[in-house]
Length: 576
Image (cartoon, rainbow, N blue to C red):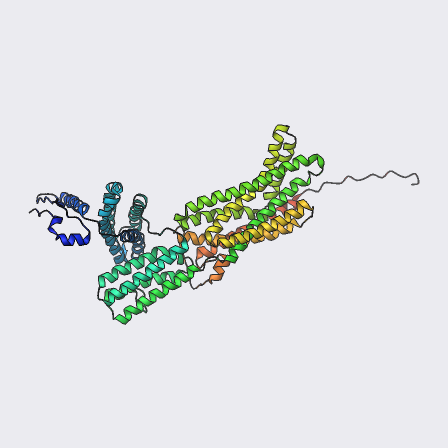
C-alpha cells in the first residue's frame, strides 16, 4: 500500500504564515513500496525515500542550534572510544554503565546526523553528496561493532574516520576556536547554563529534556575543560567527569540520580557537587604560568644568547686591533647590525605564522614547545661541551682570516657574512623560543623580561666595545647557563603537560602524590609519572653529559705522555 503524497498545502495557511514558511504545492516524497524486495533493497528504498523527504523539509534550526548540534556530534564521537575502553576489556563488559554510555552516545550521534542531513544538503550540498553516505555507513558499523565487543582499536578507527570527514569536509570540530582563556570561560558558562536548565527541567518533570541538557554540559566539559585539568590535577579531573555520570557510592552523579528519579534534595545535591567541581577546574586553569616565571625565562634566554654573541664577537675582534684592520672590523660590525635586523624580521615572520595557526590551540603550543626545548638543549650544550661555542668561534676566526686574504671584490661581503653569522645564529634561536613563551601566556611579562635581557647585553656590549672593559665573561656565561638549564627543566615539564592535554602522551598519576600548583608553575613538575620523570630526565641528561665530559677530559690529561726535557750538559769550567 502506497502512502498518500505529503503536501505542505495540507497545513493551515495561517500556521504556515506564523512559522514563516511558504506553502509547497508539490509532493514531498512518495514511497513506492514493494513486498517482494529483498531486505537490502528495502533498506535502500527507505533510505532514498527518507533523503528525498528530508531534502524537501524546511530548515527550522537557528545558526546557534546548528553549531551546537554539530559540535555535540563531534564531541560524542570523541567520547565513545573512551567510554568503550572503560567499560569493555578482553571482549567482556567490565563496567556496565560505561558500556551503556558508549551505546547511548553512538545512538545519539546517529540521531544528530539524521537531524543535520537536511541542513547539510541545503548548505553544503557538495560535501553532503560525497560524504553523507560514508558518515552514516561508518556510524552504522560503529553501532554494530559495540554490541559485538570488538577490540578497542576498531572502535577508535571508526570514530576517528568519521571525525576526520566531519572536520575536513564539513569543518566541524569538537573544540571551540579562539584564545585558550576565552574558550575556557565560554565553555564554563555553557556548562553552567546547561546544568541549570537541566535541573529546571527535572523540577518540571521533563526527564528526557533534563538528560539531553546534561549530555550537552558533559560533552562540553569533557572536550574543553577536562583534558586541560587532567595533566595538572588528575584526581580532580576524573572526579569531575564522574560527577556528570554515575559518581561514586557516597556521591551519586547527575545521570544516576536522573535515571533513578531520586528525591529532589538528592538530585539538587548532585548538581551542586558537579557545579562545584566545574568551578574548581576553571579556577585551576585560570592559574596560568606565573608572569614572573615568564619574565625570568625571557630574561635568561635573551641574556644567555646575547652574552654568547658578545663573547664570540669580542674574540673575533681581539686580534683585529690597529688602523690596518679598520676596514675588517667595519665589515664584521656591519654584518652584526644586519643580523640584528634579520632577527627582528625573523621574530615578526614567525609571530605572523604562529598567529595564523592559533585555531590549532594546544597542538600548536605543543609543537612550538618541542622546538623551544630543542633550542634550550642546544643552548645548554656549552655546560658540558666546551667545543660547542669555542669550535664555532674558531670557525668564524678562520672565515675572517680567509676573508682578509680574498680579493677586494669579495672581501667586504665575506666579512659582513662573518659578523652576520656571529649574531644571527643566536638571534634566530631567541626569536623562535620567544614564540613559545608568547603562546604560553603573559605578553607583558615576555616584553619586560626581553627588555631586561637586552638592557644587560647593551650594557655589556657598551663596556666591552666602547670602553674596552674586560668583564668576567666566563662567570657570566656560567650564571646565565645555569639559569637556562633550570628554564629547560621547567619548559620540558610544560611541554609534557601540553602533550598530555592534546592526547599525544598518556597520563599515569602517581598514587597518593599531590604536587602544589606553585611547584608546577615554577619547576614544571606535574602530578603524573610522565610529568615528573621527563623533566628530571632532561636535568639528568645535562648533568650527566657534563660529568662525562669532565671525566673524559681528566682521563685524557692523565694519559698524556709527558714530553721529555733534554738534559743540559755542562761544560767543565776552566777552574774545575
